[in-house]
Length: 535
Image (cartoon, rainbow, N blue to C red):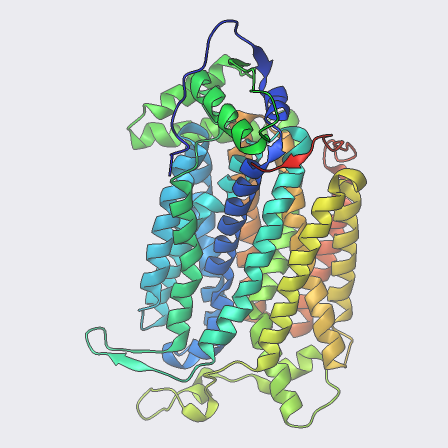
């Protein structure tokens, strides 16, 4: 297969200089863009599997690892802690070294770390390994948005991101299906060298890491972002990528693309000097200094307001969509356990209170091993069914949002989702019909739709030299919300369950109000009048 990185010779005279925005229109929207969207969607799905797959492991691994509810909260959040610790670093490196140069190696490292975590034997070791997984998966989790958007003009940027989110939604449907097909099996075998009993939940962790490996291989045949290359004065490489995009997108009847040069985007000289210095820098102290200089502009002048708003929005979204999701299978398992005893009307929180198990009850005091009579080696089938429904809603929702976002605008979508999800979160506290409460719980978790919409806003609010850092910083605050949400549920679930739903519900409603203050949120991008053709 011919590499995408090949630089082609372009006839110089006469030199046709156009803006990069116009060049993207000339290359059309077709097969090349769809391949980029598909691979980006797989990467987003890999991030989800790496970070949220642990939620299916916690209920069934509590006996092997002797986990308390609080330790489950810590373990479910530790991946996000790794993401937070590295988001700043990856954002800086993506802006100074390149998008693809960061995404590809971090995907390989995340796969290796996640595979090793499946062989751990106690809470502390698996915590360290899951932290490492989060540390590396942070690279592609935010940078992929900047990478994908920089192959598209403003009119197609939101559509491309929502298209990748649709692929991500389809991929995320695999999460409950994979969990059901693997975790509920009954096989096990001993690995004497490691002194572990290898059970299905360990294999599940490895399978969740496979999309990272596959997407990293796919990136071997994709080029660096053309906008990034142009910002690095690599005009010839940028033109070569544009020509290749056109050949993939145009039909045989279309005339050859006449494009020999691209006008550079304006960039402050001090910003360019800092970036060039960072590329050649080998000192850790100077590297940290350059990271600081790359970050400071986001919190100064006109950028301060927009940075605060997008960070607060991502914090609120992730607190619920990830933090509350981590205990979704566990809570559904507890509700099913109560229904199995003949209870027909009970609130979610009362079901939680009735099924809590202390660590003293979980272990055999004589030898410290797990008691089989209180262990869960399987999840109730309803946990998988409702999780599948949730992922199907995500896939369908992303498709709908992708189709209407240019026509409707981003603000109505954000306000509607935030208000609906927040209201359902509050009502869960009062509903004593388990099935209805579960559906409201599902709606509460769909606030994750707003992540991609806010990211689409973010890439429009910042120039190329700050875009990756801005997305990484905003998602870093989002992951902080995941940590707060997971630990909030872990600490309050068994004693103050109602408070967790009140907090998440009210926070989402507040985010809906805050959406009105996003700069340029009222501006709509008209759809391009081009045909989507394939080669």
